[in-house]
Amino acid sequence: MDWGAIDRYAKSLIKEAGHRIRVSFAGKIQIETKADANDLVTDIDRDIEQFFISRIRRDFPGHRILGEEGFGDDVRSGEGVVWILDPIDGTMNFIHQQRNFAISLGIYADGIGMLGYIYDVMADDFYHAYRGEGAYRNDERLPMLAPVPVEKAIIGVNASWVTPNRYIEHEAIGQLVSDCRGTRSYGSAAIELAHVAAGRLDAYLSMRLAPWDVAGGSVIISEVGAVASNLRGEELDMISKDTFIAARPGLHQTVLDQYIRLKRT
Ligand code: IPD
Ligand code: CA
Ligand code: CA
Ligand code: CA
Image (cartoon, rainbow, N blue to C red):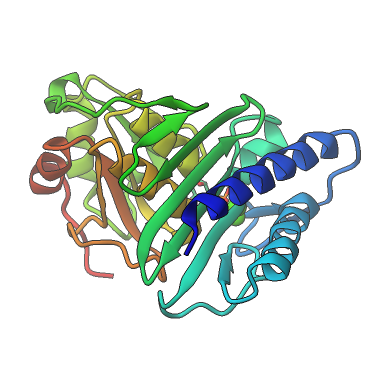
């Protein structure tokens, strides 16, 4: 497999998709809801996913595609090469803010993340990583991350996980919120992972994310020494939705051991 060629291809596809998204603001965007009134999707999310899929199917017919909007393949195993795509991560931000959303793409071979991309479209910040070759922001190599203690850490967490919910004991995570230096929530898992990779967030956690939210980011963060897993500390399978944490080395285990109490669901 010529991963260098796939890398160059994926980068130019993502840049082209980013351009399409920016142009879309000139027209009227159709907004619909999915599972509930706050689960938003637009015609642009769908168009961008279809744009990727038509190109990938044409140029890499043996590869499979797992995409959020469902135009790809019914992927139930990691066999072969799988492109895991979120055409717009942060759709709510896309609609309400016209910024703070990203294209997220991970390319996996037999379940192993080979290439990862996060493109913060409006900031024009492009993060990428090639397994074993380091992670980059706009072609500048990101340094390896050093450990930090909880009291000096900025944690990315959505405020809803600190209120009663069905996944986690909210008092324990509330303790993390009070023990750490500060918290942030950006509304795009991919952008939050880019912040972890660049050392701007020390950890990011969520009670429910899908493979397309984290596939690109997981490749990127592991190249700078950050650790990702579900909240039981297990490796992610990139097939099912799961809980999620990504953090600097050391902090990952501390958060899991001291602040995470999962409920049985
Ligand atoms: C969402 C964003 C958000 C996260 C949600 C995701 P979407 O993705 O990443 O930050 O909290 O769980 O579903 O739907 O905007 O692609
Ligand atoms: Ca969505
Ligand atoms: Ca997403
Ligand atoms: Ca999405």
